[in-house]
Image (cartoon, rainbow, N blue to C red; front, side, top):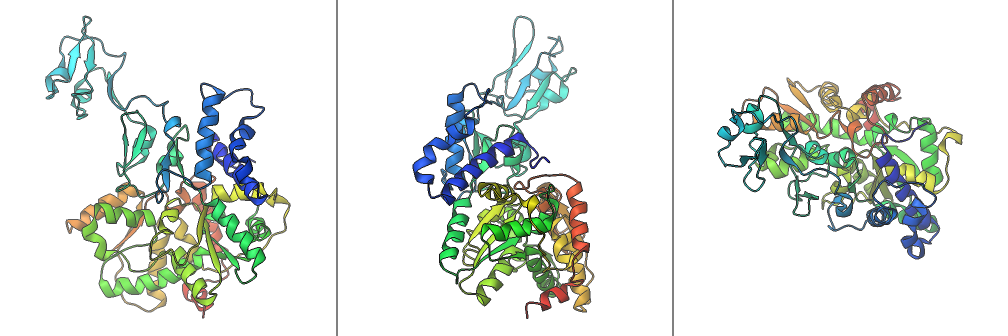
Length: 473
């Protein structure tokens, strides 16, 4: 069964798998320069103009797979040499231009950017054009189009521009590390930096020191991933990799839902703090609304904090669909608790780097959380959990929640709050469409993922948030 949505994901996986395989064998440093050749060897065709360019791009992918990038703290990186196939962005005149006499496009252009050749065909002077789009609006033939690159279309916060070399450039002050551009780039020229070597190092050290037990904390969206196997087999596979045990981040979600519902009732208005990309967006674009962000750490950090406080020598590796979690793990308030973050893409590479076929394994059990903790993975789940938290604690509060499905809806809700016209007292902010199930680090994306999460939630042994949290006491 197909493991990935796209060939770009598969290429990324092959690099990660080979880097991980060499790391397990302690041969990475001596073989690192040969990895591009290992991947292209035997191929009859390339995805680029020549095999030499493909190897050069693969060499850059290897660096990022090893956690080496241009920015020490940035998670999302552009491979400049791979970013040269998209047409120049901006408004262009197409062959549909009929050379009409009206010249409406010229009349509405206030910058004098439009001229005509001897056939009366329009041309746009890019040095003058401010991309207002007025010319496209008035053209009777729709001959003027706005060519936006897939990464720019995907980035709803406008953190991507095109530099003088015609390659994508990321504004670090705006970027929330959500990874939308990573998933949408057709050439894989934008990718997330991997910390897979850190995880391998942590597991190896735990094998030599039994005190350093490594906890694999899996996001609830895992229920919609690895569709070619059973969830219980994935859990067994994680232990076979060297993890001491597997625990649900959904238990952290139960903890957060219980605390956040109480905080909401006390403050009267709140925005969620579970999605790191959403919180980063508020910090950069709506700093005046920061006082309204829940003081609770995310489910990942909340549960990791509990693990570290009860098992001081433990190591915690979060595994989920989110590239922004890699940035969150670097924050001062989270760094002491989360040792590394992996995406589901990277977990697949880890399994295959050790030749672990999870479909052949027996099923283990994963049951730490409630239905409400597990549905945090999809849009609306957090709001439902907060409502349940209020109910279970006997708190009388008229909850008016708005579940924002994607960063554009988040922006609209935040703008309304800033203007005091929002008819809600709780904003559930999820940067990815569909919630965490739409994260860039997923193996697969799609509407079916929502039903899989709901099904997984209903299978929870603990039926209430209180039941799940009480297990920690």
